[in-house]
Amino acid sequence: MIVDDDALVRLGLADLLDTDPGIEVVAQAADGVQAVELATAHRIDVALMDVRMPRMDGITAIGTLRTVAHPPRIITLTTFDLDEYVYDALAAGADGFLLKDTDPADILRAIHLVAAGSAMLHPAAARRLIDRYHHTARAATSAAQQRIDRLTPRERDVLALLAEGGTNADIAAALGMRESTVKAHVSRILTALDVTNRVQAALLARDAGAVPGADPYPPGAA
Image (cartoon, rainbow, N blue to C red; front, top):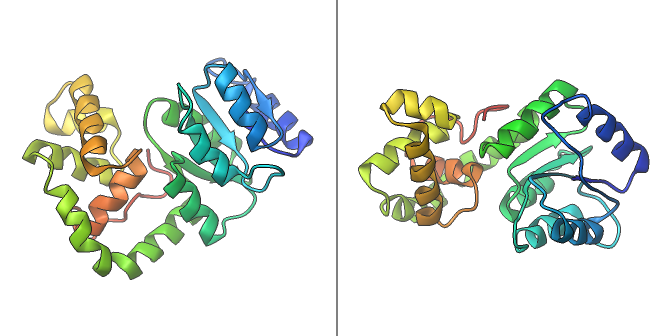
């Protein structure tokens, strides 16, 4: 689903997505209210979500979409990389954050990655996120470590590789597991840490020092 109040932007994105045989555009919305209605009526796998829209903005829409019966994975796609947009979108549950100047091939790649359960951040957004968490890490370390302590040693191994940007396939290869086993571990990790997606889990791992010296989520990584 494409969600943007600019009809020309929706048309351009639809034309781009139509070039990929693995992607089907099933709905287009002009604002957050319409996006929620369409996500209720259709089974949406991934939504490309603008931020500034009338009636209901993208950040509010992300939170609302998380409550529908089959919540889509969400990539925020906006012209603005303002700090509050990056933080608020990810805190609301977005699985990715891209700018509209992102290379078209990377937009297509992001959709496939997010649909498969991974995440993708624009390099500028990732750097802003890294800078913020470097400044606030000391205050967050204790609370984050308490959540990490809920995990088994094997789950911590998976989390460490996830926080370094590893896909399920990467983690499976590194730890000698089946990819399905990694997916099960990731699901349990998200539940135990009380987060909604891999980006939030990676940030929590960084806060806790589970990945010493590593960026919370490498730019453009899955």
